[in-house]
Image (tube, rainbow over the protein chains, first blue to last red):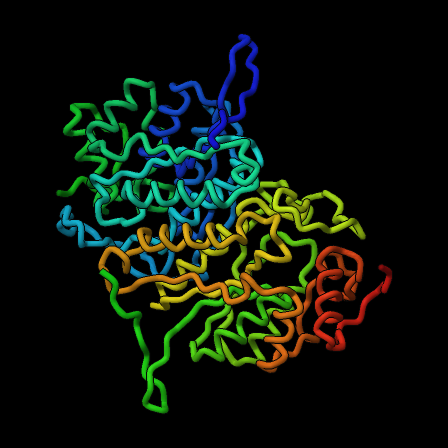
Length: 245
Length: 245
């Protein structure tokens, strides 16, 4: 049996649905938050301190949430204990390598089971908040090598989620994982965000910034970002340490 | 396509499969570890410091792993940030209440999405270790009120796991979630553990121990434990602060 998600009354007399939004502080998650708010959700944003190389992205997430006036939580989870990724361990972040879109090439920056862990935590918070929707800015186009960014993974997670929770057993709620960017190119994501008023100067994308947070301009994430702005015909507000290639 | 899980050579010239075992330090997880070892797995145990009220269970997990001579990791994850359970928040642990087995009663000690989060972390470690099996001591008999202890949840998690990981995309591994205790009564679990040499004096079950770690003897977990030993006709090695009811 599927029943309506919980509603809360608004000052205007209407109802608002609550949503947990995974907010890393990057371009994609900031756009995802803007989409969720534009759709009328009361948003609760969640970031993870998982042993990243730096805190610039987390600081960006906090700023974005504060400007949006929403409840924001930063949750500590020590994924370094598991090892295995250039984003957390002592493996070099690849620079200026040829980024291809083959489905069988998985980047060195892939963190084992990261989206599974993040969605699991978001699910726990969603249950406590009685929020039926979880938004995540995964993208199957530019990051086709990350298995946990694919629609079939998201669908399987949603199925599992609806068997995992008290509210699912009591049949008072149904949980949805919403991925508004999953089929968009970086150009299309930036275009959508600009139309919704996202201030991309607030966001942080670089995997390997200089001290102070200046984006390197060379890692995969910087290169995709620059290419996206270029293709969208929009000036990239990001200062980069290096403008090469 | 399903291929064989990775094997490592042993000194004896045979092969060993690796397994990640979720080890809380309680009776069920200690028994689960003994089952996995008896089946010939090379075991890697994982515990979570998730903001429990005390560390006695975590200390028990460390002792059990050390005696077994296996690699053990304790991972910090702040589930308190999500709120909502008597095991982490400021909600009283129920004492001496009538524990019934109705499927629609969910205990106040339920932690939102806990097994989902723990299994997600175990999955990340399994991928790094190239371990195809994850053991978890969930039980659908005595804890029928916990949705994330049911076989249908475990099956859905396994399906999701095989879409989440690099190894699944590359089709070099297949992940299994093993739940050897899921259909056993506490009496049967204790009988199995005793036959495998588990020293239950090393384990900790109490939700609300006295300072120093002495089990209360009154919470749901203590009561189930005492009843299990009693029904198995085995002397319970646990000292309790209180022997009531």
